[in-house]
Length: 345
Image (cartoon, rainbow, N blue to C red; front, side):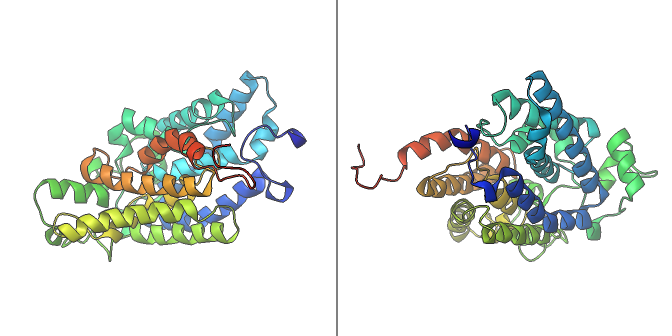
């Protein structure tokens, strides 16, 4: 192939991989700042640690493969993987789990398959799911947003918590952590409480959890920026969010006291981040327009199914990985007809 390009993602010179990844990083800034504002310094510490561990893992893996490390590091794909991983994990995650997650994401899910362009799964979500299955307690210990916290952690407190596992003096893990809105909703519905009773808690905002819904709004702004810059197309994010909203709306219409309002699913977890920044991965997602619509809609439906009846309340990472498996088959059956040829030729 011309210019030595042998694998996806393909792009002309103005749309080099490093430039695309840089625009993704810029688009993540509003949502990232919102997460730091609402959930504290642990988010920033995780971002720095994940970035360092990702670069280190990429370098070691490429050296073991006898490949030059600098060109791969310059494309910024490892850094984007690290940022998405760090935004998905709790701000209390021990440093060694961040290291383990990056080793799996970069070393196994990416480099073991041949590097950028060959990985069948989204590396950030592969690392996230690996930790969630292996260390569920650490991966679900979220801090409350600052307006609901009994004690807000300072920078030094966050560093000590991440590196030593020691809560601030006079506090316990139970005192500084709480269930996410998705966990809370699922647990209380299982206790046969009605939606009206559940939403009486100060945890809730207009649609989703307080703090969480504003984080979703800022990631939405970043997603619109990516659409405006044509870094991504509208097919996957729109079909994913519509698939989630329509499915949730159907069950909410049947019984609004046991199924939350559809907007709850958009603004209480990783749906918006997943729709614009994770499911749209140009390597592991579908590439045909029709295939992208099917791919995104299926993720949206699966997110609702797992959140409602499965064991993991957020579900976005699992759904993306499941559809990554199906992406080649979907692309195969949704190839557009070549002009001048019958569909079967």
